[in-house]
Length: 85
Image 1: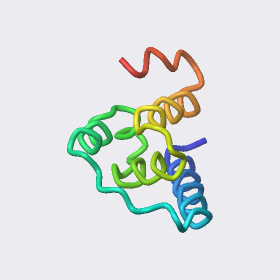
Image 2: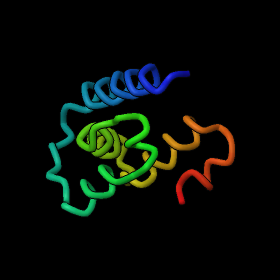
Image 3: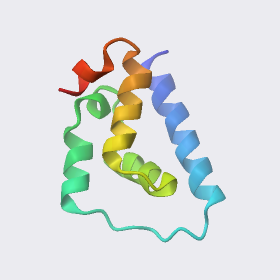
Image 4: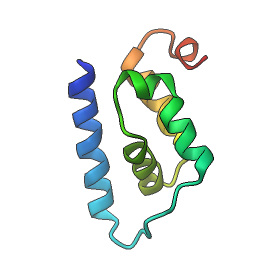
C-alpha cells in the first residue's frame, strides 16, 4: 500500500466519521497537539496534515497520539514500536 493510497483512505475514513457525527463540536487544537501532529515522523512520511489527524482523533474520541500509533502500526507492519522512537 503506497503512502498516497493510505493517506487518501485515511482522509475518506476521517470525513466519513465526521459526517456521521454532526453533533461533535469542532475542537480547537491545543498548540501541543498540533505540534505533535506536525512533528510525528509517521505522519510526515505519509504527508498527512495535522488538522486531518486531529479531526480524526476528535471524531473517534481518542488522542492524537493514539491515531499516530495506529497509523504507524498499519503503515509499517513490521516493528512498529521502533518506528515511533
